[in-house]
Length: 302
Image 1: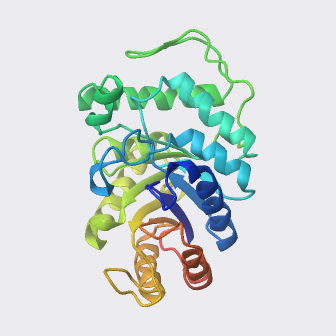
Image 2: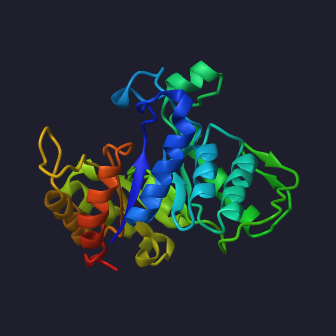
């Protein structure tokens, strides 16, 4: 099993003036500790359950580009970019640029968007749910067309691109892995089966619900003739890992137990958050006692 790190919170000791140094060091420590990937949210305001909107929130793709310059091996992705935030052609160009400059380390994490507060705050249109999913499917079609080098006009219901040129094209071929975030059974998981290379589900759903979501994904794969094994199964798990597991944290052994449960369900890649990532001791602990054990886990359903 691969282990990734999500950094959803940029309110660190030292404040905004030192954020560049802090984020750069976190990326370097994550790579040295053996994390497979590094993820940031693509939000413009902090989300409610992590803090007030006024807390520091860095723009996701710029942050990943900065991290790419400080690392050599970490895979890099947004978890995930809302379809409403950027025009599709610009978003594909942005993701491709990250892939080129990182020498093929980008993920293309996308979803239907949900945070209406930041849309209103920054003047971004927020269409109804059904339209957002229509737009998401068009984005996926445009992305695949641009990465295939197809410059013919695209005329969809919501987007029109007269020449979807993408030069330079991605280093990763045929394209950066497409991760579609969310567990909606009728739309999201169908899109994963039809267009995606990876799904992303919340580990907090619990064992039975996760098993059911993967069964639904398997059914969608069968319906479109897609091998289920081709889909990378990823989960986002919030857990604060400390030596003694006190104060609501888990010990390294307890963290490995949770990862083992997810591996038994068939997850290949678990992205964790909730740690004190500004503290170097966090990376020493996870790198020594969690990541090696996770890498030894056998993933079911491959």
